Image 1: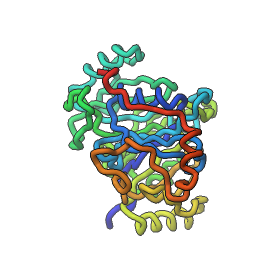
Image 2: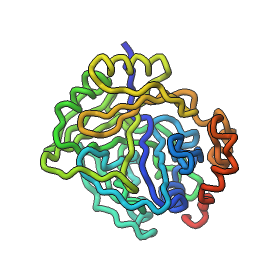
Image 3: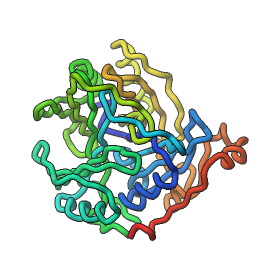
Image 4: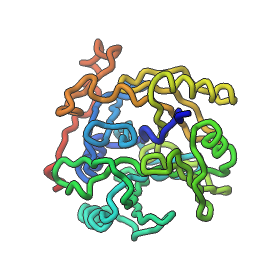
Length: 316
């Protein structure tokens, strides 16, 4: 039987200044801005999607940038570090590039046999780059980052929890994940155990709860093929006592949401239909795209949004 869940679909964070947000993820990290839309639950706030050329599932980091938002704090009950996948020989390039733009970066660390570096974005969002030769996905570049060093998509994510048992049961019994191994208080899970599906749990029994605001992750979404497989996941979760939402139409995918036992908001999102349904592939992310129900209010919505631009030249 094919798995219903096949890895990470996207990760969504809360951010501060919208222009700084675009500058960091497109200019410094080199991800493509594949969609500018609005937070469907707060229409006066942008929703940015950054990913590979087409915003394929497993590559998309998204943000809700609230101008003037205070910074949150990392803690338990949160996804604290998002890890992106890069080539095996790319960490030296990225260390130099991050330092060039004044971004503090860790020394090379090793975890489960892989080299990685850690740093934070302008809002103190935790980011890792994991070097490996297993990721066959093509990276994306606007041309200012060499293709061989470009980000391929997600490697994985770290959940900081006070205990792991109930979350582990959720992942391994109901979400097609399996335990891969552990190092100290870090436990690793995967569907196929490849870049793009890794979930780590760090157990921090006495840790303080995180405070969600700018620089923290709002939710992690897991991939499922289509609406049929999504409804099957929803049924499994509900039968096992999880409070799952109805299916929500996010235009570019369908979503269901629930909170896992450790406090992190989980989403299960469909791979279909993707980001090219309302823009040509060559021009993704250039216009503010609104859901049909918001179009009558476009003038008011656009007046409330801070103007932003794509400025790659400043980050060569």
